[in-house]
Image 1: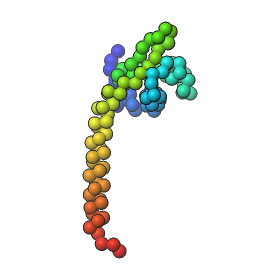
Image 2: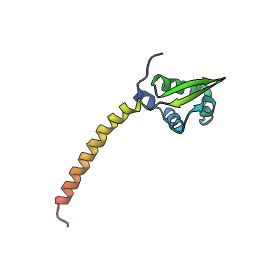
Image 3: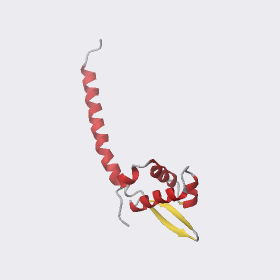
Length: 105
């Protein structure tokens, strides 16, 4: 099984929704699947992509597989997004300075 880039895994809204559900704690695959209007095999495929991106880990308990969020790969995503946050903050600061120099009408 080859790894998947975290960015590629996050590109799909179903996978983002699965991660959001796992924020509150681990869930069995059956409960995750019930939350979506797609078939369980499709949810299983999404979970496999998330596993390959190392965004979730799983543990078998009896006949059920439980999934846990592993947010460590999100640090790379956060660092990338932060560069754009700095970009927009600098632009807004520049706009604020420009507006403060203008005389009121």
